[in-house]
Image 1 (spheres, rainbow, N blue to C red):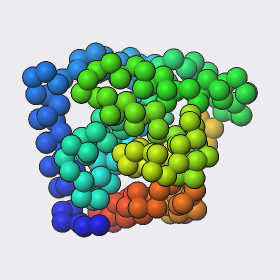
Image 2 (tube, rainbow, N blue to C red; image 1 turned 90 degrees about the horizontal axis):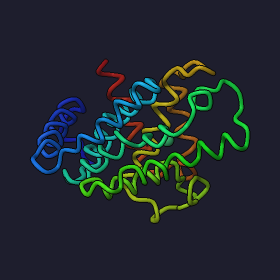
Image 3 (cartoon, rainbow, N blue to C red; image 1 turned 90 degrees about the vertical axis):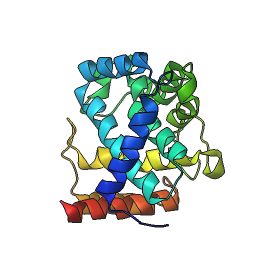
Length: 214
Ligand SMILES: [Fe+2]
């Protein structure tokens, strides 16, 4: 694991590379941005969460010294990872109490719905698979398929831990966001079960650096 740049510089440089590739003729997909705008209008929290997770996932992927193409796939998947929530009622998405079995089942379909929504766009086909895997756990206890270890794409391992960290540190209708130290402890406790160790350790390193830089 190497750290050649400070996180903000690495993020900016990778983001610029990503933006230039994503904006290149033949690769920009207006329909996907339109879907994100619809998600924004429907559930502003989730759309903002997707943007924050994209930034975090980018930092983690760069810190792991990945090639630009894998960083780009990670960012694409992170940005669209919850797009499948378009099909879920806000009364379920923001429900303060426990979900009923039927509501939980609907919620657990969103990774597959997300994959189905975007897989027809050629440039994001690998990202579509990453999206479907973003709730899979390292030990096979996640959903929708119970995939484990090497059956989970590396980009999805990063997305999984960044997704959980961002959800922990932000306020939700049913609870206040955790402080960084509490969230970091929860992530640590999930290493090897929910989270792939290297992805989780790198996330903890990146978030600690961001905290010190703030
Ligand atoms: Fe999700």
